[in-house]
Image (cartoon, rainbow, N blue to C red; front, side, top):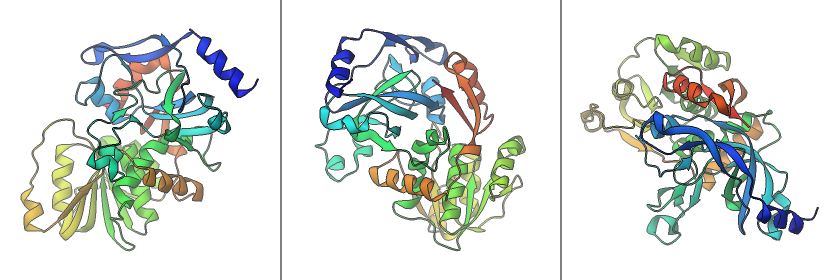
Length: 345
């Protein structure tokens, strides 16, 4: 069937598909329901999802701690194959294994967009929060959101491409870790594991810290060659600290652990106002940085890391579930069980 015929058939479809829909307050406002199968319009592609990761942001959305519109299909860490496109010029994408940049639209006129920082556009609308996302059989995205997954990735390893791109944005653009740096990463979830690997690939000596309850997650990092600890870390003993837990005590410990003149990087999302000893920033003359979501540059960096083997993704996927098991999997993610749970389509 030609690309034109496929697009014509797509326009005539009125099928529905199962999806995880946030339509009301709290976790109780999430249901596995039915929505219409998306239509590929010009400039866009319909991606048949293979796997979608449950992210900490999904937990925040579930508890109304992160901005979103309703009803909306949740899920933004998407791996899939391009099923249909809306323009003949994009036919070369059909069948490609891809991961998805998350924002569906930006205004393209504001200061941030014009500076190439579409991730900071105030009118940005992303999949999984403001546009339908990946916890469904198919998802509609602009073609510019597509990123080919390197052959080096395993069967579903590419589902971690989006969080890796976010870490690359925080740590590599611009670089915050130098060869020989002593780096502390707090929080052994997916973002902490990825941050530890990226920092180590940058030439640092890395320690990934967690609590006794994190022993299982820390063991995965140890097997990947990352130094781990469950003990309190000494004050002012690290050149760079990367806070990935989104937990107030961890942020306070990280601010104590960084040396004078060092760097503090906030990767985790708290989802609420927190109290931390910010006077440490003044007294120790710290450089504080972060990074929101991802950029095209960070996606390119992430794909190079995967292709070169500098990061290992597969062992971080610790649970695979069906769409019907979403609520149990979300609860487990909120409890910090495992590292990355993915919903298979």
